[in-house]
Image 1 (cartoon, one colour):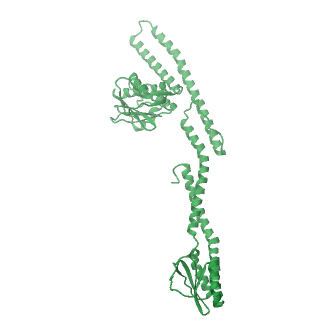
Image 2: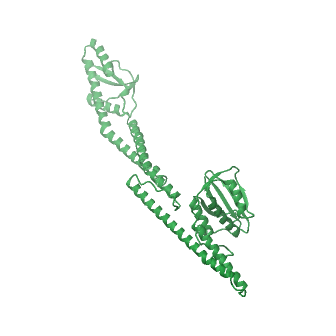
Image 3: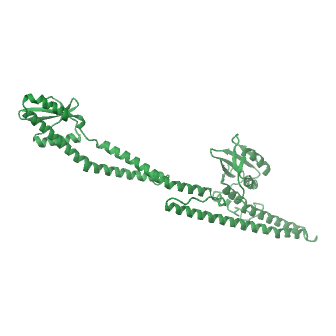
Length: 427
């Protein structure tokens, strides 16, 4: 338990153990240095009062004894009876009464056995020619160390829990904010810095996180600018090459000309992919009626796709339509290329997100490649043949757009053995 769970649980667990140790130490110290000495002193005083009362009663003239008995009852809650009744012994193991018996034996020099009856505890005391029973209230029977221990433990645990809750909340609140900021951070320019206040360690953490986020944002921005600039600049010589191809003399071999034009088309598509990869984070989201939007989107991207809805109600989502269109287009294109033309799109509604499954009936993606397929320029076919795939940027663009807009993307196996790409859109 102490190795898992939230910081609050772990801290409370450690502090609870500390509280138990403190409570046990306090109870032992209280019992050793306070309770036992007070109990022994009280027993000695009670024994002295009983013996003194018996001596005084014996020494008084018979006509004065009734007044003395009344005085004892009113002032000390003691009852003196010259008639010795046959009573049963008191229950053993009561600390105070055990001490009282020992003190009476010490003072009288004879074995003593306390008895109980009529809600009183009685001591049989022989004094002079008389044997009398002196009774006192049962409320004097014992101290209650168990209750004292229970109060100390419960109150100590409550105080420790309240203190740890206060301390941990002051620590965990900034940590939770940091965790949420790290989850939301996608390297965009709209990053909101964490407040740099609180304890010194948390201020250092916030400063380090803000610095890291700014540096990553600048790095991604520079990368985007660089890739977009290079790709854009490549379009000019590519256009010149197209023009030069059109101006080739008629005697140039037609097959050679067509091969050259195909290569130019491949280059143009590759440059377009790089531009889309570089500019994947720019669009802002707005409210979209998802079912209407999706019903119109899928037929416009691919023919023959089976669309299945697993819920009927309408859902409003914050969505970047252009980025989402690009994600669906790339996934459907990938599924059509590798799924023998049989592609199924299924939409599920969960408690806090919508899951879109794009399933094909192809050979699927081996487990060891499922993380790598989202890397730029990665292709399971190392030949880079255009017949088996594109530039290797399609799924990388999908992954970048999902990361930029807070969507989740993962891949598994479909029921038919092909690939099952799942895009999750949070509400």
